[in-house]
Image (cartoon, rainbow, N blue to C red; front, side, top):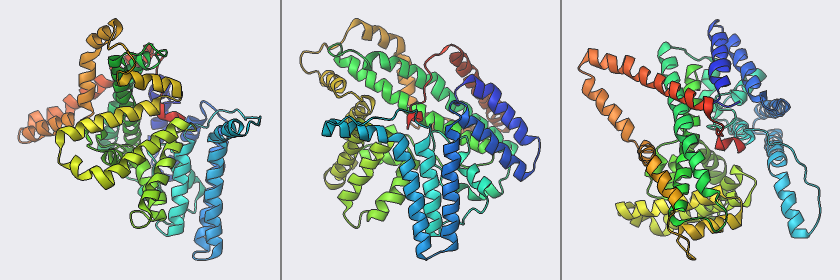
Length: 471
């Protein structure tokens, strides 16, 4: 089930909200969320919900043993068992086929490759479960003695299948005792509708158009078509994933949970390092706290640590060499910036932006293409090599049809809209009636408009993927 489906918006969510709010008991509300989350996850592939429950059981008992034998070897053994079992399950379902395929290619063997569908969101909920067990071992959180409350943390449907990666420490208190208010529900609903609009109106439109340029046959690319297509993909993936995060944060707020922000206008960055402080913040902080710092951080073998983190970052995104190359690509530029380019990037406004645009668009092309031959054809067009045509009639028509959409989408990637809204609110603060109308009526009407337009588009759209579902 996806947030941007009519069934979720007009059936699943209203029923869940009704059942959740008709009774105020804490235990009752927790059970409603657990049941609805398991139904949400099992909607497409019911069998994998058992895997989710199994991994939670493993981590539940491991954490209890860690807590019971603090400082003893039994504690370390329980931690090791939890980490190894979680990673083995993740490896088996996500990377075993990729590993066997490469072994067959390398050794000339014919080992049978098991084929099964990837459990949705396994990378996200595995990392959440791991963070809980490790934090219990470190003494940073209290062990959760109730299995159903730990299952609520792992399976909570707003962030279950595509993040953000939520740390147990951030919502531990809210699992036990969360406050509800009409204001929070209203703000959460508004955030959900904004995220839905990002997804249904902008991401889907950009993605559908991008594929018509990026999936060109070898030799049919044009220079401007390559640039236009990868720009549209950059727009799509930002609005797709940040829109999902907005919806997750909004839903969490409706149910009384506070999730941290996962995006902070990444496309206004000046460098690769800054981009990754702003993009998918929850993933970056996970690798920082559980891989980079334990390896020694900046104090011991820093270059090695960066390479390991970015190899794992690429691999986390998918069992394909292009994702590994994509991760190492960013690792290379982060190292280059750290040791050579940082001072220059901080003091050259225009050139640093040009550098970042090239860096990002090339990076997204590596991310997009799993086929090396097709990627090389794209890069040939991107740089205008080998007599590739500069443009064609199709591109001229599409640009003339969508130029306003692209301009508005690019502006939406910056803090401009937020700053305008803040400016208007500050100006109207002293005019109570006008301010009350703006905050209490104009904004809700605008958000309702987003919902209506999104609904209208979803009714007729066949193109409605969430890109991060496959991770």
